[in-house]
Length: 127
Image (cartoon, rainbow, N blue to C red; front, side, top):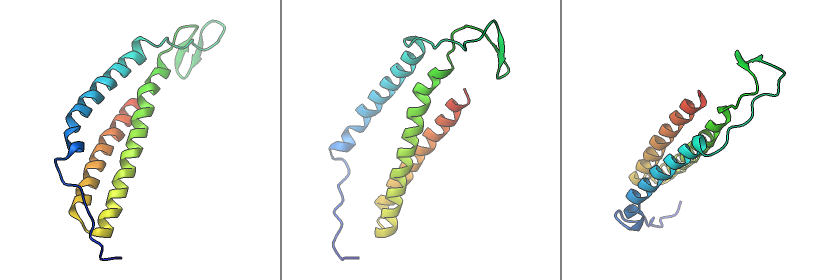
């Protein structure tokens, strides 16, 4: 390793000032997207069967199904959890390389966010 001093950004700069507006925008857009998935997008057609059939312990005829709509929320949440895990891994490796406490804190925060999204993925996957 080199003795080159690592230049880190100071706290309180412009990215830190965007956190609250970004959280508000994310909450509003997530809620709107979730509601649009269930109230705006048309449901898919049921299974093409003659009369009623037992499919997966459920009697299905030509009724409209809502089961695919959860993927409009489930998949983005799952992808976000993988991205947060990737950033957590990156910061953990940076901490091990530099022993700078800031990278350890960033890694911990990323992994806490990833935990939230992994739990949301598991909850929405059960629906």
